[in-house]
Image 1 (tube, rainbow, N blue to C red):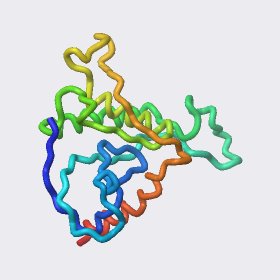
Image 2 (cartoon, rainbow, N blue to C red):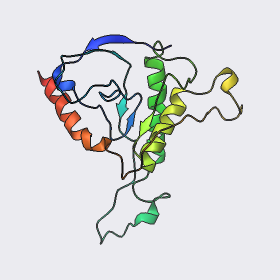
Image 3 (cartoon, one colour):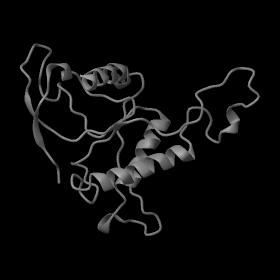
Length: 180
């Protein structure tokens, strides 16, 4: 059950929509076959796009004289915490409840595409979110004691990933647009 609508984008939206974290459907002008030349605002089919940040994480580092060192955290620096996992699981449940009319009851690979930057904390956030968003139902249940199912989270090696470079530009343009 995919909800499609036709919209007209203003010229300032002629950029690739990326996230430093997760994108649940990536619509870019390259996918639409558009080039860099000037175009009138196109009529395109769009899908719902959810972009969000990773959950609570441990510090990236600390100052050299801090007596608290990296081994205090079970997974070390820059990793998702139990709170961060719970935040995204709850967010997935909230999205399921709020957008139930737009989502199929069960996970269908042709209806959702999940992209994450290639950091443990962002991939784990996406996985926790998907666990809350798409708990297995019916024939998807493979273990009655574990209401979870694997759902692909796509990434790109950090050396090739360009999405995070567009975050500040996109955030700035959205803030500017909303201020109008």
